[in-house]
Amino acid sequence: MNGLRWKIDMLPLSDKEFRAGWMIPKMQKNCYLRKNRMVMEENRRRKLSNGIQYFEEIRRGGYVYVDKTDMVWSIANGRKYNFLGRPRRFGKSLLVSTLQCYFEGRKDLFEGLRIMELEKEWISRPVFRFDFSGAETAQDLELRLDNYLRRYEQVFGRDTWEQTLGDRLLSLLKRANEKTGCQVAVLVDEYDAPLQHSLFNDEEHKKLVSVYRGFFPALKEGELYVKCVFLTGITKFTQLSLFSTLNTVSILSLLPQYETLCGMTRQEIVDNYAPELDAMARKNGWGMEETLSALKNDYDGYYFSAERNEPVYNPFSLVNALDTGRISNYWASSGGSQMLTEMLSRQGANIMDLDNSLVDGDLMETSDVSVDNLPLFLYQCGYLTIKDYRDGVYYLGFPNGEVRRSLYKVILPIALSRSSSDVMSSISRMRVDLSSGDIEGAMLSLKELVAGTPYASKGEKSLEERYQFILVQAFYLCGFRIEQHRKVSKGEIDVVAYRGNLTLVMELKVGNGSRGIEKGEEQAYDRNYLSSFCASGRDVYLIVVSFSTKEGGISGYKVRKVTYDSEGNISL
Image (cartoon, rainbow, N blue to C red):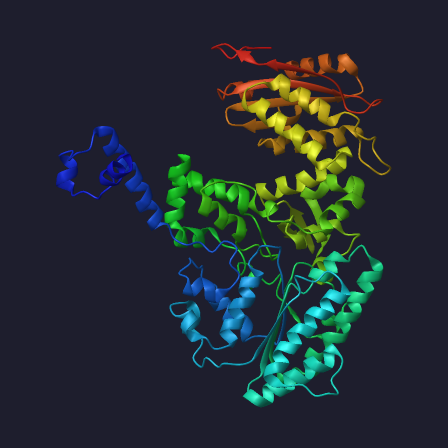
C-alpha cells in the first residue's frame, strides 16, 4: 500500500491540480517540487568531454567542444614535420584525433566549425597513427610498433624482404601513396613516454634510443610520400634521430600562434560554458566574477611563448571543476610523471628556488630534457610556466594554485626526509585545527612535522631560509595565501598567511631559544608590524617560531591573538 501511495503521490499533476493541493499534503507537495526540480536540472545538464580523447566521440556524442579547428587546419597544411610539446592532460591526444579525422576527410564531423571556412577539398588520405603511451621498455615499444605496422600491412601489404621496423614503415608509406594516390599523414602521440620511464636507467635508455633510431629515419627517407608528420609529447629528446634526421622539423611548442592550441582562454570558457559557470556559482553561493576568479586561481596561468599573449587554463582540471562544481586538485590526482620524484630528490637545495627560475633563451628553445636542468624539466612537464621574457632569458614560475600544491606535496616529504603519507597526515591535522580556530593545535602539529629536519646540506642556503621554505609550504597546503618578506615602514615581516577571515603574522628566529621568541614579539610590536592587519577587521594572530640549530626542528613557538581598541591601539 505504501509503495502504491508513493507512486500516486509522484504522478505528474496539472498546475491547477497542484495549486489546489490535490490529494497531497504540504510536506509531500514540497518533496515533489524538490525532486521534480532535481530531475529537470539533471536532464538539462550538458555533456562535458572530461577525459574523452576521440574527436569523433565528442562530435557524435553531443559533448561540449571548444573550437580549435582553425589551428588544426594551419598545422595540417603548414610544414611537413611538426612537434608539439605540452604537459600531460593538456588535450594532446584529442588534438591528434582531430588531425586524424581531418586527414581522413571526415567532413561531416566538422560541420559548423571554423575549419569549414578554410578547407574546400576534403581529401581522404591514409593515416598512420602511433601511440607510444603504453610502452615502458625497448621490448614494449618494438612490440607496439610491430602491432601497428601489421595492422596497416593488412591494408597495404608487405614484402618478404622487409624485416626491420624502419624498412616496413618506409615500404608502407610508398605503397599507401601509390595505392591511394595521396600522400600519407603520420601521427605519433606521446612519442616520449618510453623515454621518460627510462631516463634514470642508462642501459634501458640506450636500447630505446636504438629503437627510435631504427624507426624514425624512414619518415625522412619517405618524404616524397608524406603529407604531414605530427608528433606530440611532454619532453623533447634532441639526441634522437627523430630530431637530428628530421632536420626540418618545426617545433611548435613555443610559437605564439599556437599558444592557446591546447588549453582554454577565459573568453572561451565564458563563451562555451555559461550554464556550467552559472551552476557552479549557485552551488557554491558565489557571484559570477567570484566563480571565474576561483577557476583562474587554481587552473589558469599557463604561457607557452615568449610573447605571453594570453594565458590558458589546464583543460582537464577546468572541465572537471565545471562538471562537479567544485575546486579541487584534479590534475595531480590523475597521475604524474614518474620522473618527477626522482628529479626532485636529486636536486637537494635547488628545489627552494623554483618559483623564480631563470633559463637561457637558447637553452629553452633548443635543448632537450636533462636530469641536470630541473627548471627546464618542470616547465616541459607543466609545473612551471613562462612568467616573463627579457634580454634573452626566460623567467619561470608556478602557473597556478593547483600546480603549486601538487608540487609541494612532492617536495615537502623530500625536504623533511619523511614519507609522503606521514607528511600529509600532519598537514591534514593542521588543516582541521586551523579550520576550528585552534591555532595552538596547528602549531603543535607543525612542530611534530618539522621534528628532526635534516641539517642544511653543502651548498644550501641558510638554515633560516630552509625552515621558512618548509613552513610556507605547510601553510600553503593548508589552504593559505602566503606573502613572504612583506615590507612595512620599519622593517620586513618574514611570513604573512591569509585564509578566510584569518591572518597569521609570523616571525621566524633560528638558534635563540626562548630569547628568540621574546625578541620576535618585541620586534613585531616595536616595528608596528600588526597595525595594518588589525585595521582590516580580520582575526589576527602573531606567531613567533624559534628553530633549533642543534636538534633540528622547532625548539619553541608562541601564539598571541592581537586585540585592538576603537582608537587602533594594539595589545598582545
